[in-house]
Image (cartoon, rainbow, N blue to C red):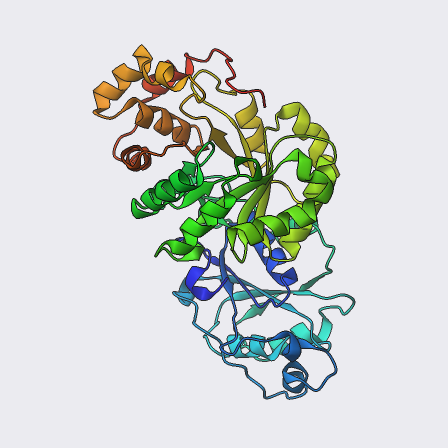
Length: 448
């Protein structure tokens, strides 16, 4: 992540600035962002480091810089509105017992007077020790420099949360995890990434239909695409993304591993990346519970650490399944995706999932598999649609959003795709929400 695609919450007073080469420091930074609602900024070298540069004790670039106290590698880009931040978490790996010299460049590039800086580092064995002391010496006397924290490569999200809780940070007026921002049309995930709250489901779309549908979605401003290995269209999704003029970092791609991939999950992740032709996948879910699902999820966790995947989650997990599954994994899922529509509302499941800091996403929001016409023609829904001058589909999708459920309706019709994104010019009243809530039949339309 570069400065141009950093996480941003307009009113945040906390920034997580970090330098990462292997992804380990980035993962810790993401967990801090997810826990605090901070903005994120990756410190990127103007002249990027190569594997050769980073090879230890070879006399290469990194070795040379670390041996020279005056070395100041140039940084690409800068932090916008740096003056808004009162607290800055500063993260870096340990190189030869010290912070990389690019961290010195960062500290000397801005006026941090009256700012609180909290350093954290990642290393196999070295503590944060003198690295933090030496960085502190570069700052003005008015900077509050807090004790830092070292994290090893096997540190967990809970380790980070425990540390943050011990800091007693002031509350930040910012978008919190799981909260829908109807202005930006995004939700902040517990992984630290923002995800659009409505998009396109590609289930049942053939390759050609898929490409046309994604093109229509992106042209209309949609940025969330849901696919899966079992849909057979991952390659088409990737091609459509690469063919578009929309920057890759603006598009959020979800795919899923099917249970028949669980016993070779690491290879399946690489296969998905290769099939889609993408450098990373925004989110991978386990498609539904099955033999080896815990081991497959642990492979997803490793893919996060390796920078191949940004966020991970589950599909078709309910309360009992989650209670059994979650104690066996290290990273809390960022998302749980289940069947949700007015005839199958999961009113006991949604609050439980959200209480865990996990975002809920609904598939089949319009009923699915032979039930769409019945749902869209429901008298209650059509009456509400008529009152607002919108379609029944828009009413149902807006109902989901107001319940805090992300929607991914499937369609191959460009007009419907555009209509399904136009959900912000009206709002359902409490009475209208209650009317739709009363339609629940506990009627599931698929077997998952």
